[in-house]
Length: 148
Image (tube, rainbow, N blue to C red):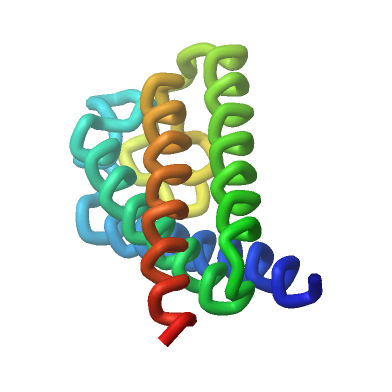
């Protein structure tokens, strides 16, 4: 039981770290002008693409770590369910909040960008589904390595 819980927790932490580091690095590489629509706090299509790639890598890694620690398939399914549920909750929040009305300042720190960025609901839903699938794929890879 301990391994199952630890697998889910550590897998989720790994995902969070990869997403944070990956998106922070991408923001510094791209800058606000390429991460957001012009003069807006709505993320750009390029940023959605970056989010998808980072999300896939994070989900696969998180699923693999979960499977390696837990050594059973159920914790991977639990982690995938958590990722899906949280992603859908975030999509619901995006729908409820609507598009931002304030304009983007000429310069914006990474922390401000993370707090004020508006991700459209369709992108949130896509990320939730990709996260679910990625965790399941990573879990399959991790289970194969754990069996060896």
